[in-house]
Every structure is written in structure tokens, then in C-alpha cells.
Amino acid sequence: MKKLLALLIFTAPLVNAQYSVKGTMTPPEKSDQIALYKIEGAKQDYVAFTNIKLDTVNINGSQQVLGKFNFDLGENAKPGAYRAVYRTRGAGFVDFFFNNENIEFIFNPKYPDQSVLFTSSRENKLYSEYLQAYNAVQKKIDSLQASYIESEDKEAKKAYKKEIKELEDIQKTFENKSEGMLVNSFIKASRRYNSYNPHDNIKDYLSATNENFFEYVDFKNEDLYNSSFLIDRINDYVFYLNYSDDREVQQKLIKESIENVMKKISSDKLEKAVTYYLISALTDKRNGPLVDWMFEEYFDELPAKDQDAEFKKEKLDVLLATVGRTAPDFSWEENGQKLKLSTLNDGEKYLLVFWSTGCPHCVKEIPELYKFMQTHKEVSVISFGIEDDAAEWTAFVKDLPEWHNAIGTHPDYKFDNETVKKYNLLGTPTYFILDKDKKIIAMPDHEEDVEKYFNSGKNN
Image (cartoon, rainbow, N blue to C red; front, side, top):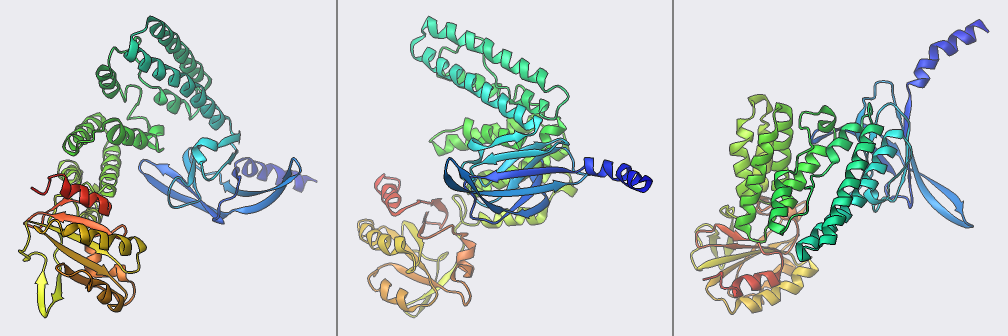
């Protein structure tokens, strides 16, 4: 009996220090595995993975299949923001806070953000309640602000002030409820700036929103840093709040917003995280000029230990073929001659199109493109076939006389062709419009966009 009592006393702290994260998917995801990460700035540190187990339950007389998973967190698990990832593409994850308590939640994997419901975890329940209450009133405020700009109605102004007071009460209530909790930092930082009186016009409203976007965000807060919160806020500010249909204006707005963000950052580790994140985001958007600017203004100014040469090379390699760059050179055989893109001199502009006979969209669009380009003889067209072998391609290009027709193959995988990799294609067909010096000046998405470009007078 004494031995058993001693064993219980010895093991009790260990048992109490174990926490679990349990999730239920309804309906289940196709994947049978899920991984857990801890968010650290712009990085995700791997924690563990587990299997998703199927379970059938009877709900109101009908059988429903659920996907269930469970992570056991040890005594050394750090409090902070975590991410359960069940799909590598798209919104295939659920974020939550862990602060030494068991967590359980249910969600629809197709719409994780909108559907997640925490059934266990005081911290996550409180934060979810806060967001729901706060956003409901904020939506009313935004609607009343829009109504006031349209009509300057006194009743709308009165209602606006009333909702502002309601929002302040909600904020104060939840800040008090969360005192001493991990989510307190996030509740304080989630508060939005609203003027006490509605703005008279949209220009003043947008200006005030822009200037005060980070009013309640503490960039020195470690809890915020060790989550996706700061990066998400910065992303919204840079890429969504500051927007214009005019490309030149858009570039200027993005640059100004990045400069504003960087002025607010005081720690080296946050500066590094934000710099790497923004460069990656701009690379994904194929924004070569601003990636170059980010490297020059911020990356190259980081302490030497924080400059990852491989990261820089990787991003610049992706952008070899983007607007503003000279098109990567390649050569091909044509009528017994060896031609090179860089020395080609038979057009005022050039249209370069990558396509494949194995691509149904290409087989449809290329003949349509050929017909259209007959009306623009001043443009020289180079079609580059990405093929497993030359047979089908050779037959197809017989109907494309007057074009320069090049082919790229690879013994293992056709998209591993050296030229194709230089252009970092995301799919086929892919179009590039070049000036006389082979500088890329446009990247239309579809054949009809090529037509719009040349019919718009931009070819003059």
C-alpha cells in the first residue's frame, strides 16, 4: 500500500502536466494525417503529427462520418499560438492558443476559420466570443459610416455614436475578463481604430484608417510575435488596405506602406521575420521591382548573420522572367539555322508563348492566337512547345507558319527542361510580351488578354 501511494505521489505531477489537443472534422478531410506546429514569428516550428481516425455516429437517425485526431503535449510544451495543418495548400489549417489547458474543437475542413467551435479551452472560447461580439458591432459601425458619407443623415450619426459606445464597452469587458490570460494581448491588439464621429467623405475615412491601422498593436509584445497576428496584420495593411487598379500607383502604395511598417519595428528578430515574409509574398506575386527594392533597402541592411544567401538566390531565380526583367535567353533550330531569342531582330515587339500539345487549353487557344496575330504583323511570335517528344508537336506547328517554333523536352519530366525552369512557369499556356530589346513588358493571363493588350494601343 505504501509503495502504491508513493508511486501515485511520484506520477501525479507527470500526469497533471500532460495536455491534449483534440479535434473533430465534420465532414472528414481526405488526408489521413495532420501535423502540429508552433508559430514563431513568420516561421512554423514542427511539433508532431498524428493520424486522423474515422468514426461513425448516429445523428437524428442518420449515420455521419467524423474525422478525429489527438495530440498529446508534454510538460515542456510552451504556451503560445499553434497551428494544426491537414492540407498543404489553401486554408488547410486551424490556429489556436495553448496555455497549459486541454483543448477541444470541431470544424468543417472546407471552411476552418468560419466553422471552428471550441468546446474545451477557456482561452480559445473567450477569444472566439470576443471576436464574434466585437465584429458584429464593428460591422454595424462600418455600415453607418458608409450611410453617413452617402447622406450625412443625422440619425445615422447618432446611431454611429451609440455603436461606438457599445464597441468600447465590449472591448473593456473582454480585456477585463482576459486579464492574466495569454489571449489578453490579442484582445487588446485586435481592437480597430474608429473615430468618435463619422467621417464626411471616403477620402478622410481611408486616410484615418491608414494612419491609425496599427494604433493598438504593440510590436514589442512577445505573445504577438510568437503567433501569426503581426504578420497577418502587416499583410492586410500592405496588400489590401493600400490598393489601386493603376500598376504604377499600386507599386508606390505598397512601397510606402512597407516603409511605414518598417518604421514601427524596433527589434532585429521582427525586422528579419517581416523582411523575409514580405520578400516571399512579393515573389509569389511576381513583383520583381519591389523584390529588388526590398533586398536593397532592407535585406542587405540586416546583420550579416541574418542574411541567408540561399534564400536570396532562390527568390531572385524565381523572378528571372517577370515584368521589368530581360527575358532569359534560349536558342532553337529553325530551317537548318540556330536562332537565339537575344539576337532575334524581326519585330517591333515579341510575343513569347509557352504551351504543350498535352494541354487542352493550349490546343484550343493557340490556333485562336495564331489567327489574331495575323492582324499584328509587326509583332514577332515565338512559340515554345513543352513536350515529351517531338512527333505530335511537329504535326501541330505545321499550321503555325510565320511563327518561330521552338521545342523543349526532358528525358524524365518535360517541365524540368532548362529553359522552362528559367521561366518558372505556373502552367500552360503562359504568355510574355517583350519590347524590341527583349525586356518583359507584360504577362497576359489568357489569349483574350493578349488580344486586349494589342488592341488597346499599347503596342504603339
